[in-house]
Length: 176
Image (cartoon, rainbow, N blue to C red):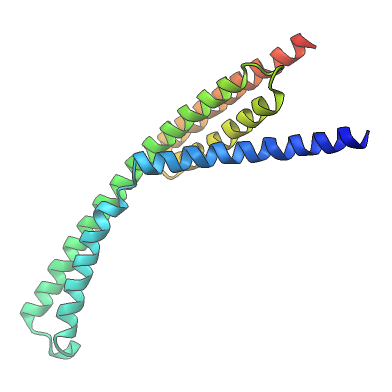
């Protein structure tokens, strides 16, 4: 009896660990092959910050010339433009990342439906990773900036989760 409890505990731990590892694999994979636009824009922002600092450090604030003040204003305007472009690029990236993660979650949840009787621990781990990845994808969908997109993402995630969960449960009930 004690051996069965210990085995069940180890299976539960492994199932959770597998779920987390597959989710981490998907997350790192997405970041590796579909990088955030932040890196692209951070160099521009850093350059503009250095230019602004250079103008400010050239003389005391009260002694800045009209040309210096115009330069500072131009730098701020350009930095604001880069910031706005970065924000829009990040929203598009978050939206696409959300879609990629939800597709991966769907695939792994569908894979968990296969061989459930022969490999129950692996199957459960894959199902759990699908749930974690789905939640992760929905999180990125929320940060995509668009209310319509958020609603679409959560609707798709809900339908897929219900459909795959139903298929999983019906399969188990029919095999019992």
